[in-house]
Length: 173
Image (cartoon, rainbow, N blue to C red; front, top):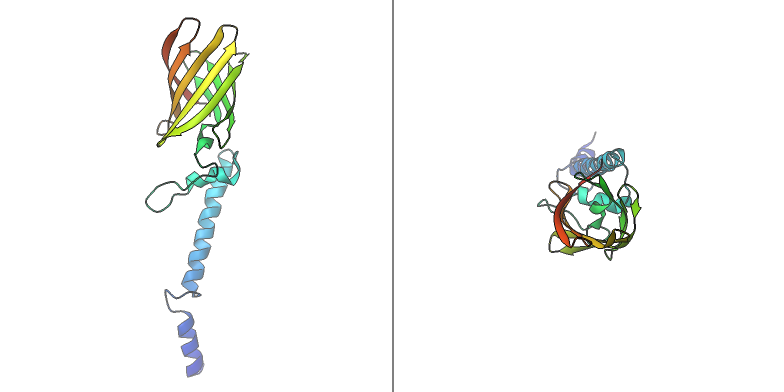
């Protein structure tokens, strides 16, 4: 190999320059890491909210989650929630970007959900559910999502008795 060829080869492989072998390896490593995260998320139960639901798994530098597709992070509320003290189920099928919740309530039979919505107050997610059925004339749940425990906690207002009860819903795995 001549002197000119060795100089070209040395220039191509200098660390830190764009287009070098290290940059290519770093690009491949990042692509593999993203593919691994997608595979793990899919294996754990799919991506019900599409790829937008995967974004909280990826963190920006500093550990803060990146912005989600719906802008408010409501997708974490989706799922079946069990109230262990009575076996009641709150099934959150989805949450719109505006906070409108598609939900069902079971005791064990379906009870009409008149209104269900989510909102963000600072970093806190709040859920409000109003029931309208015989025996449930305007009974409501006012809940807060606890991310560290992955549960909904708050107040159940029993309209016929006009009483408040502290309640907890845990996610059904």
